Length: 219
Ligand code: CDP
Image (cartoon, rainbow, N blue to C red; front, side):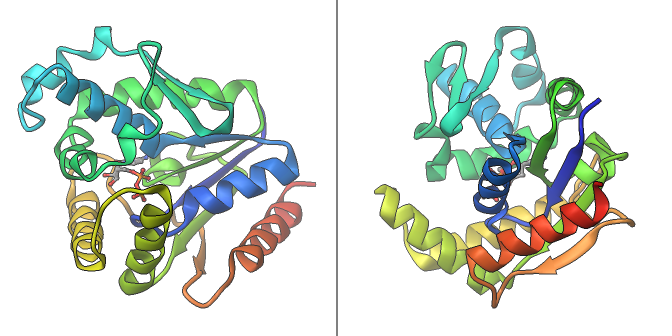
């Protein structure tokens, strides 16, 4: 079993930006669990399924092979869908899909296997509470909704993903509410997590803080 660092928090809190950089500096493997739920949702849409229909979506489990490759590349059944999974249509449809318990169990099983092999930094909603309850380091990363929407808006514009600030703010608030209220493995801070509000921090400051926390916990 390797060392595990869990970073949870609401939508667009900058978890993946931080986790990626910390992973690079510490030589850990970064695992973006949100990308896995997004990829599963992409697959269901690609098959023409109704993402609110649990029976249909769950029946796809044996036909979905998601791979996270270095550089943030995401493959679904061998197809590169790195860009597609960031589109607004995925944001909309991922919410019901990630509430389906069999889908979560299927993906969590893979996430736990990845953490067995390597030192990992894994980000998501339920990592410290459910996926890796024994993680050596647990961080709950937050920022104000306006701040998160502003950051995601800028990121999307840079990536050429069409959107408005208002749409993003609404989407972020809607997903947070659904993630916090779902019955199975909801978004909530683990009791032993460290709360990190990044609203007024630069990326570099957050990265340094997270590394400081890791170094204080992992000798
Ligand atoms: O990047 P962003 O914060 O917008 O979202 P993400 O981390 O890519 O996750 C996409 C969606 O997957 C979230 O809105 C959650 O509903 C869901 N998710 C989840 O349920 N559990 C996780 N461990 C990670 C993501």
